[in-house]
Image 1 (cartoon, rainbow, N blue to C red):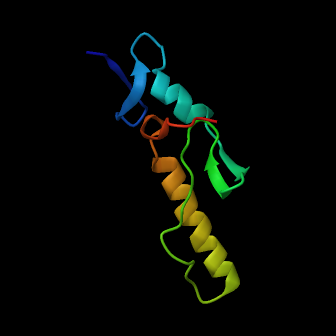
Image 2: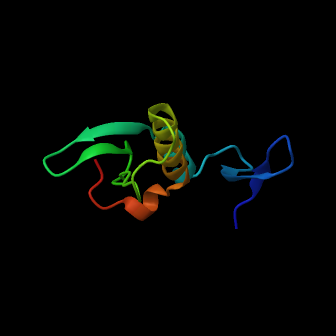
Amino acid sequence: MANHVSSLDGKRVPGMESDGEWGAATKTALSRKLVWIEQQRFRGFGCSECAWVFNPSSAPTGKSFDEMMNNFQLQRDKEFTSHVCADHSEGVR
């Protein structure tokens, strides 16, 4: 079993081995970017390292256009940050 390195706050750093080597999943998570994708059947945001794309669950909510855009961006960024590239490896770009 791999040894994990602790961060300054004492929490384990997943993917970082005690010998200083990063795991493949951590390297991917650090290198991935939220990108704009334009394809024949999809236009929207996705991951630069896997087949994950952002599909909003509902229309943006808010009392103003700015609030709606902010809520959309927060949802998109939260889902992008929490996705696991290995779960979306089919059709990697």
